[in-house]
Length: 77
Image 1 (cartoon, rainbow, N blue to C red):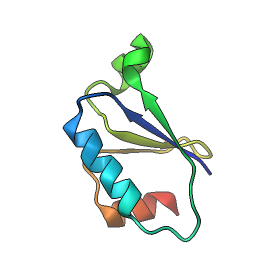
Image 2: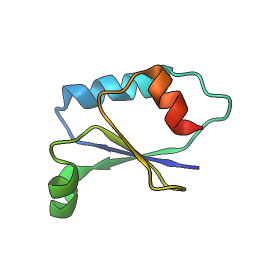
Image 3: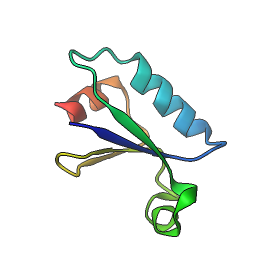
Image 4: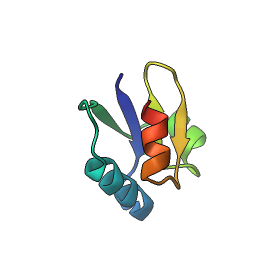
């Protein structure tokens, strides 16, 4: 499994989500690719009002902010 982390610059909520992601202990490291939505009009339309968003590459499931540690761990199972 890998994660896509949809974000953009100057996004305070994105910084909070990133801090939570980094500080959550995981039994196995999960690769995370950071995607700046500002690089694509399609991504701005899809995620512009939802970021930060985590997306699992294996299932396509997405987790929109706000989320807490328990919700994050459940999402990753």
